[in-house]
Length: 409
Picture 1 (tube, rainbow, N blue to C red):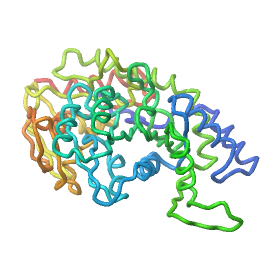
Picture 2 (picture 1 turned 90 degrees about the horizontal axis):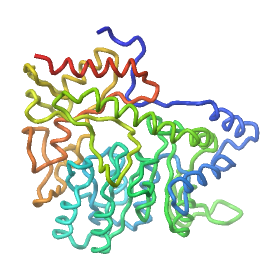
Picture 3 (picture 1 turned 90 degrees about the vertical axis):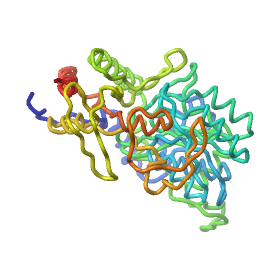
């Protein structure tokens, strides 16, 4: 197999043309800053799509999460239960506000927060009042179970739906389950503004606070007056134009992402691997990224440091490092599963709770097949596959053959 002439990406922006018209509108009307018709419209579109009552357009999903932490009243030293397998942007805003993340282990069913581990966490820390959940790779959590636990203990949920716009759980859109919620329009997301994000909430007063904080907390005075700390977090009307042009294509993007996922699933049916799972009876992901995990018995020996990886080739077996190296050699982009937060150098001394109890984070040393640290196991055996909407079926067929070749004798 020859390398692809043009790179096959993990997930890149897919533009359609309408975006330019709304950007041009911002230019022609000279509304180039953080007010304008595009901002108003994308807030309406996001609220209508998710079912949230109020939406605040911001500069990034991280900004939305930060203001969510602030709205939740997190203070210095407060413990916060956080999803473990996620991107760092989920957790960093907890620290911005002085909170202490406690990481909750993952479940194999959805690769999301394990409700059993969350219940164990409340047994250990009944004082906690904030839970941060993530719908990893666009796959919804078991929200009924998590909400039931939160209600039982008087805690609120902050929902990181950055990756899951358009996904549903029991018919309800993600992005409206929590008290405060965030979505992202980063360049690799299901729809994009090149940047940008949205805070979603059912609380009008909270939305108004977030909107004020996002514009440097300017008071209603004829001069710049500030009575509390603010941030430069408001979305640009130009960026909002890109998002506005993308919104009509959301379902089209989801349909193509699902097709890619299903073609991988069919293509790998004879390999000792599984695709990233979801609760088929209750949820419909947006299939943002297609991922796979190698069965323990089919893993060759693999070790990772904080910046490097190595493996020993074994006939009939493979590992994420081999597959990712081979994809890269053919000019295709894959990626390891998000490294669990409790394994990150900055958070290794933070508490990590599984369904069986509490411990501390770990280094990269890991034995395949461990059932006591599900997140580490998924990280060890899993990888993200090229999932770009613009990837052709023919290109995907080659990717499938590349992966198959890694398991040959």
